[in-house]
Length: 461
Image (cartoon, rainbow, N blue to C red; front, side, top):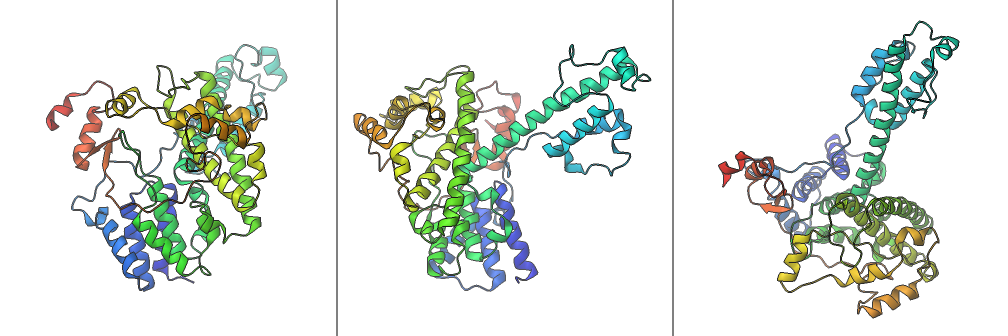
């Protein structure tokens, strides 16, 4: 059993899997974990962690970051539940009051709506104000004769609004999960017992997840790569003690052939099924965004009316899930699946100003965009409405001079080379700002947002 201090540090590291902590701060927690265990680190790991932790918030004089340290959560239904308790006093008379977090739990919200609906003779889902309400005779027959029409309508409207609120919460929670999965794979779903089975495993998973959760920067080049020299040093510790490492936990976030070779076929199959199910969920989100406003497939440049936020979050989640799915198929020796069904990658939408920047700096559309534009849409492939075998993808890639293997169109992604560690910048709408206090002021003033700037910006310019 770990000591209380080690246990607390492991739980803090595990909590970062659903937060958006800077990699520097996670590296500092990893340092604390090894120090609490009395672990003697090899020079490479010690140097790499020290380099990252040097700029952790605990080591900076201001100890402050302007960026949110968690993914945005949907606004819960606490206010609606409190109103329901006022209008339906008998609702909780024979049961304890709902906990404070009940407004964030769709199952509890739905249970309240259903119980409250029974009190006024309303079935769940009956929301039509003209057709589903009870008239005077029906209210009397249902034992509601003492309830005035006004009071009945007030309760009916509340439950109708609560159902709409519930649908929004479910949608936003799903979108939050999609965002987290796109950036950090299945880290957010990793149970504590699996995560904390080995300290080296926990350190690597937490750090790589923090790197994956980093925000995109406004640039005309490549985004910062996840796998850096700190991750490489931590991964080397896993290589040095393979019998102690929880490779199954590592496979949730880092599905290289080296990692998957240590995982049992049963666990690999479980992950494959899980990612296949997630691909279908994300395909539905992509299709919904497409049907609301079809995109310009040939360029993938944002046009007025495009829901770029939803599309880009879903596209990133699709590509992450697809990469894991391909890697698992390869490790299980089931490549014949891709001979029949080989769905393509999904590019993100690009802002027109970034596209212009690319052109002015001698670049152009990424070749992958042309491949995507010619392949069947992913949701049509998964439903079996369109055929997309590996041979078709290879043929389209050949037409556009794209290497299907190096570009991960027909195989798993190539193993990443470790990049140098770089300090996490403060970002204001994707633009790097040196000082976090200035970043807060610029964000409040609306700078870089594309909207009108407020007077507060003048104080910093």
